[in-house]
Image 1 (cartoon, helix red, strand yellow):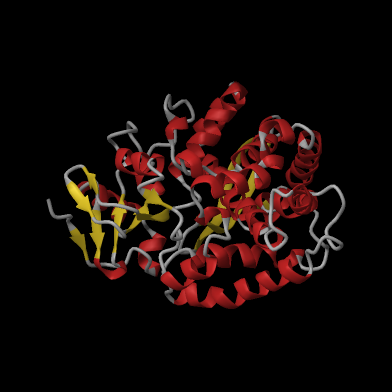
Image 2 (tube, rainbow, N blue to C red):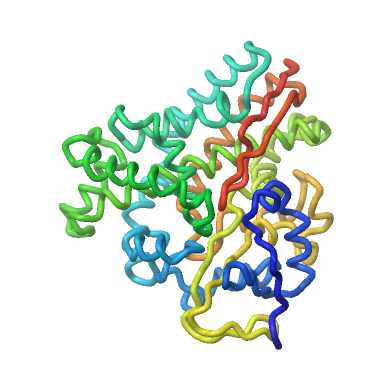
Length: 392
């Protein structure tokens, strides 16, 4: 069976500004759709996307996950995101070690204390930007300190992270504009994050310790730092600011959460489902594969559209409704799935949970003043989200 075809650009400004009607159309067309402008297939239905993410041997990451050949070639098999099999497992065991639940228990008090201080300050302030003043604070301050990065250069982390996610899409103008920032970031981690420059006891130093143990080549720590300086920032920042925006639009859900704080973990999953910070990554087929009767040839580029899958009515009842009691909210693909699930998922949830715990007793309602979207080829999030808080 031939895949249905679309001829419009899902990465245009118009499409990124309002992607959900396009996602709905993609789901209606079939489990696999050919995107003519990008010479790639897209999987927008939940089951097709989830099953492909589980099937890493056929839907491989080893040829890159970007929607453009130059960036895939540049990444090679150096980025953990662009590896499979034994190499992926080895890198993940080192890079992901400080991000495991047990390891994070050591930093939980620090994050919770900082979250409480931040909430106290912003509630007293009365009006704040949920992006710049709220969501960015923990990732930029606490996380960069945990990584052990040098002070000089930290102020560039947010532009670098945004550039990385733009480069994961096609080389449109946003993608091209990101190249200079990525070169700058590579220069920083290569020359300023050496063994002697990073702070003792940090996650960066642990990468160098892995070299001493023989678990990593001496050329690798700088490249693996990208796993901390990019994904650990924008994913959490966008999810956290999306969370405040959603509660401002759904005050009944905020009231419910204040009455039943045990719903916090489910509420976080519902935020990640409804407003997925990562819209999707691509894979490359290692062999011919059937997707609900449609044959994808070997060597095909395939975009796994997490955000579309997370609103699939075949999987989620009333998928556009924000419901923190949703029974299967945890089924979402907002942080990926399978072997390549986001290694920072536990950290992101810890940060969001710490902020919510502090907000619940202090805020009766969020009133949205204004908001605007930040256009990015891979991430969906807010550029601004100004809210007034009504104290509890």
